[in-house]
Image (cartoon, rainbow, N blue to C red):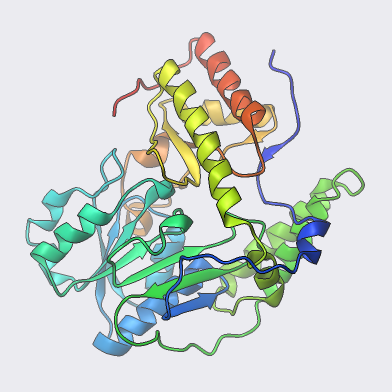
Length: 356
């Protein structure tokens, strides 16, 4: 039997040091046309509104492997959309774009999955067949790649990467600033902020209280995602040590990759990138996820499949499981995850073989 240990995964906690550290650290992901918002969904909404201001309502091409919030944001603006296929290597199926369907669309959204899907060639290919296409790079899972791409717009979110209750950014590479939105105060972020702080004191206050605050924040976010970035989130974000965070994630990811290779488990890993998670692809995904949870490791999946019309149809929805590699953890924690995988395999459960 695997020994249960402290919880891994879930929301970040906000420590007392984060609340009092006022040193502002620089990050080089921005340019002069960067705009900030409360959430990735709000950032995408702002991009679409900016395009709409120039071209009117458009139809957009979306990958058939994505979070439902992307499609819901497109629908909120009453834009049309169609899906293109994402292959198992997490890159687009270019055959779709050469069949002629793409030429009717002025806008296409690409996702840098897990911070390890270099979109450079995909963007160059799109520009070669449709030079006037407007390309949006979704870097929500690729914070450290925000200024990397020759896309017309790039956007990211901070909450999945850092102990920030809210925050997102848009870089516009077309001339001129992004259209200004009149955004209200972010009420949902206050609940997230309170929950993140309370998580730090789980030895003294039942963790369920923090989780209830965080859930309330998520429910409000669904209804009120159009909001500005809170000052509390800004204070934490601009005091973060981005270099150290990147280094920790890279070291953890490299160790996981080495061990996963030994186990011949199919996964995605790209050296010298800073990943959000290390995704593995397995047939018995849900069974393994339950085993991790029973050992206090809460590995997320990307993403829940809602329906063919909301987030397309792709086998990746049923097979992906995200191993945790973030800056809260070190070598022992990475080996905990590997130990559970070994235990899972020893019981004769099906694991897809490595196939890069």
